Image 1 (tube, helix red, strand yellow):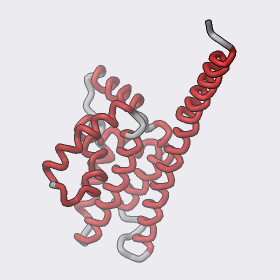
Image 2 (image 1 turned 180 degrees about the horizontal axis):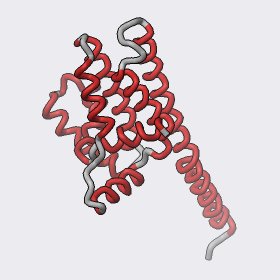
Image 3 (image 1 turned 90 degrees about the vertical axis):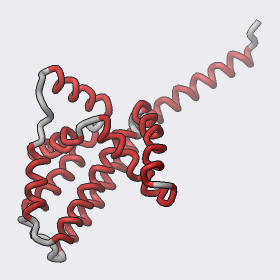
Length: 196
Protein backbone atom coordinates (compact mmCIF):
# COMPACT_ATOMS: atom_id res chain seq x y z
CA UNK A 1 0.00 0.00 0.00
CA UNK A 2 1.21 3.47 -0.91
CA UNK A 3 1.60 5.78 2.03
CA UNK A 4 1.39 9.57 2.21
CA UNK A 5 5.18 9.94 2.11
CA UNK A 6 5.38 8.08 -1.22
CA UNK A 7 2.55 10.20 -2.67
CA UNK A 8 4.36 13.35 -1.53
CA UNK A 9 7.60 12.10 -3.11
CA UNK A 10 5.86 11.38 -6.43
CA UNK A 11 4.20 14.83 -6.34
CA UNK A 12 7.53 16.55 -5.61
CA UNK A 13 9.20 14.63 -8.44
CA UNK A 14 6.44 15.60 -10.87
CA UNK A 15 6.73 19.27 -9.88
CA UNK A 16 10.53 19.16 -10.32
CA UNK A 17 10.25 17.50 -13.74
CA UNK A 18 7.67 20.08 -14.82
CA UNK A 19 9.86 22.96 -13.60
CA UNK A 20 12.93 21.49 -15.31
CA UNK A 21 10.96 21.07 -18.54
CA UNK A 22 9.89 24.71 -18.45
CA UNK A 23 13.46 25.84 -17.83
CA UNK A 24 14.85 23.69 -20.64
CA UNK A 25 12.14 24.34 -23.20
CA UNK A 26 11.54 28.03 -22.61
CA UNK A 27 14.37 29.75 -20.78
CA UNK A 28 17.28 27.68 -22.13
CA UNK A 29 16.03 28.25 -25.67
CA UNK A 30 15.81 32.01 -25.09
CA UNK A 31 19.28 32.04 -23.51
CA UNK A 32 20.76 30.21 -26.51
CA UNK A 33 19.11 32.67 -28.89
CA UNK A 34 20.37 35.67 -26.93
CA UNK A 35 23.91 34.22 -26.83
CA UNK A 36 23.81 33.57 -30.60
CA UNK A 37 22.69 37.11 -31.35
CA UNK A 38 25.26 38.57 -28.96
CA UNK A 39 28.09 36.69 -30.72
CA UNK A 40 26.89 37.99 -34.06
CA UNK A 41 26.63 41.56 -32.75
CA UNK A 42 30.25 41.27 -31.58
CA UNK A 43 31.44 39.95 -34.96
CA UNK A 44 29.48 42.64 -36.80
CA UNK A 45 31.01 45.31 -34.56
CA UNK A 46 34.49 43.96 -35.32
CA UNK A 47 33.70 44.09 -39.04
CA UNK A 48 32.52 47.70 -38.69
CA UNK A 49 35.72 48.62 -36.81
CA UNK A 50 37.75 46.87 -39.50
CA UNK A 51 36.09 48.99 -42.18
CA UNK A 52 36.26 52.17 -40.05
CA UNK A 53 40.05 51.90 -39.86
CA UNK A 54 40.14 52.18 -43.66
CA UNK A 55 40.80 48.57 -44.57
CA UNK A 56 37.71 48.41 -46.78
CA UNK A 57 35.11 50.92 -47.89
CA UNK A 58 31.68 50.88 -46.30
CA UNK A 59 30.31 50.98 -49.86
CA UNK A 60 32.27 47.92 -50.99
CA UNK A 61 29.91 45.19 -52.19
CA UNK A 62 31.69 42.46 -50.18
CA UNK A 63 31.37 44.48 -46.98
CA UNK A 64 27.69 45.23 -47.60
CA UNK A 65 26.86 41.59 -48.41
CA UNK A 66 28.62 40.38 -45.29
CA UNK A 67 26.75 42.88 -43.12
CA UNK A 68 23.49 41.89 -44.80
CA UNK A 69 24.16 38.26 -43.94
CA UNK A 70 25.01 39.08 -40.32
CA UNK A 71 21.92 41.29 -39.96
CA UNK A 72 19.79 38.51 -41.41
CA UNK A 73 21.14 35.95 -38.96
CA UNK A 74 20.50 38.34 -36.09
CA UNK A 75 16.95 38.99 -37.28
CA UNK A 76 16.21 35.43 -38.38
CA UNK A 77 18.01 33.63 -35.52
CA UNK A 78 14.82 32.49 -33.81
CA UNK A 79 13.88 30.63 -37.00
CA UNK A 80 17.28 28.99 -37.38
CA UNK A 81 16.33 25.53 -36.12
CA UNK A 82 16.90 21.98 -37.26
CA UNK A 83 13.17 21.41 -37.81
CA UNK A 84 12.71 24.50 -40.01
CA UNK A 85 15.82 23.68 -41.98
CA UNK A 86 14.52 20.14 -42.59
CA UNK A 87 11.17 21.54 -43.74
CA UNK A 88 12.90 23.96 -46.11
CA UNK A 89 15.09 21.20 -47.51
CA UNK A 90 12.04 18.95 -47.98
CA UNK A 91 10.17 21.75 -49.80
CA UNK A 92 13.11 22.24 -52.16
CA UNK A 93 13.43 18.50 -52.83
CA UNK A 94 9.68 17.92 -53.28
CA UNK A 95 9.40 20.86 -55.68
CA UNK A 96 12.34 19.49 -57.65
CA UNK A 97 14.24 22.74 -57.25
CA UNK A 98 17.89 23.38 -56.58
CA UNK A 99 19.09 25.38 -53.61
CA UNK A 100 19.01 29.10 -54.32
CA UNK A 101 22.51 30.49 -54.20
CA UNK A 102 22.09 34.12 -55.27
CA UNK A 103 23.71 35.56 -52.13
CA UNK A 104 26.55 33.02 -52.22
CA UNK A 105 27.31 33.76 -55.87
CA UNK A 106 27.28 37.53 -55.28
CA UNK A 107 29.51 37.08 -52.21
CA UNK A 108 32.06 35.02 -54.15
CA UNK A 109 32.07 37.51 -57.02
CA UNK A 110 32.47 40.48 -54.70
CA UNK A 111 35.37 38.77 -52.90
CA UNK A 112 37.16 38.32 -56.22
CA UNK A 113 36.89 42.08 -56.79
CA UNK A 114 38.62 42.91 -53.49
CA UNK A 115 42.09 43.98 -54.59
CA UNK A 116 43.99 43.50 -51.35
CA UNK A 117 44.65 39.84 -50.51
CA UNK A 118 44.87 40.55 -46.75
CA UNK A 119 41.47 42.26 -46.80
CA UNK A 120 39.98 39.34 -48.74
CA UNK A 121 41.33 36.88 -46.16
CA UNK A 122 39.98 39.02 -43.31
CA UNK A 123 36.51 39.15 -44.90
CA UNK A 124 36.56 35.39 -45.43
CA UNK A 125 37.42 34.97 -41.75
CA UNK A 126 34.51 37.21 -40.70
CA UNK A 127 32.25 35.12 -42.92
CA UNK A 128 33.61 31.85 -41.50
CA UNK A 129 33.04 33.08 -37.93
CA UNK A 130 29.47 34.05 -38.81
CA UNK A 131 28.76 30.65 -40.33
CA UNK A 132 30.34 28.89 -37.36
CA UNK A 133 27.93 30.76 -35.06
CA UNK A 134 25.01 29.73 -37.26
CA UNK A 135 26.21 26.12 -37.31
CA UNK A 136 26.56 26.08 -33.53
CA UNK A 137 23.05 27.49 -33.18
CA UNK A 138 21.66 24.71 -35.34
CA UNK A 139 23.81 21.90 -33.98
CA UNK A 140 23.37 22.47 -30.28
CA UNK A 141 19.62 22.96 -30.59
CA UNK A 142 18.99 19.44 -31.87
CA UNK A 143 19.82 16.11 -30.22
CA UNK A 144 20.10 14.54 -33.69
CA UNK A 145 22.69 17.06 -34.83
CA UNK A 146 24.58 16.91 -31.52
CA UNK A 147 25.05 13.18 -32.08
CA UNK A 148 26.25 13.89 -35.65
CA UNK A 149 28.77 16.42 -34.31
CA UNK A 150 30.06 13.83 -31.86
CA UNK A 151 30.42 11.36 -34.73
CA UNK A 152 32.33 13.91 -36.81
CA UNK A 153 34.91 14.59 -34.10
CA UNK A 154 36.94 11.41 -34.80
CA UNK A 155 36.98 12.23 -38.52
CA UNK A 156 38.31 15.73 -37.84
CA UNK A 157 40.86 14.35 -35.37
CA UNK A 158 42.08 11.94 -38.02
CA UNK A 159 42.37 14.77 -40.55
CA UNK A 160 43.86 17.43 -38.29
CA UNK A 161 45.62 15.37 -35.65
CA UNK A 162 45.54 15.85 -31.90
CA UNK A 163 47.73 18.96 -31.96
CA UNK A 164 44.91 21.42 -32.27
CA UNK A 165 41.95 20.08 -30.31
CA UNK A 166 40.48 23.57 -29.83
CA UNK A 167 40.32 24.14 -33.61
CA UNK A 168 38.73 20.72 -34.07
CA UNK A 169 36.00 21.57 -31.56
CA UNK A 170 35.42 24.92 -33.28
CA UNK A 171 35.25 23.39 -36.77
CA UNK A 172 33.13 20.35 -35.88
CA UNK A 173 29.70 22.09 -35.99
CA UNK A 174 30.26 23.71 -39.40
CA UNK A 175 31.95 20.58 -40.79
CA UNK A 176 28.93 18.51 -39.78
CA UNK A 177 26.40 21.07 -40.99
CA UNK A 178 28.05 21.42 -44.39
CA UNK A 179 27.92 17.64 -44.87
CA UNK A 180 24.26 17.35 -43.85
CA UNK A 181 22.72 20.48 -45.43
CA UNK A 182 23.51 22.87 -48.22
CA UNK A 183 24.79 25.90 -46.30
CA UNK A 184 23.86 28.20 -49.20
CA UNK A 185 20.22 27.79 -48.15
CA UNK A 186 20.99 29.12 -44.68
CA UNK A 187 22.98 32.06 -46.05
CA UNK A 188 20.34 32.96 -48.63
CA UNK A 189 17.54 32.82 -46.06
CA UNK A 190 19.52 35.09 -43.73
CA UNK A 191 20.24 37.57 -46.53
CA UNK A 192 16.57 37.53 -47.58
CA UNK A 193 15.48 38.16 -43.98
CA UNK A 194 17.79 41.17 -43.76
CA UNK A 195 16.47 42.57 -47.04
CA UNK A 196 12.82 42.15 -46.00
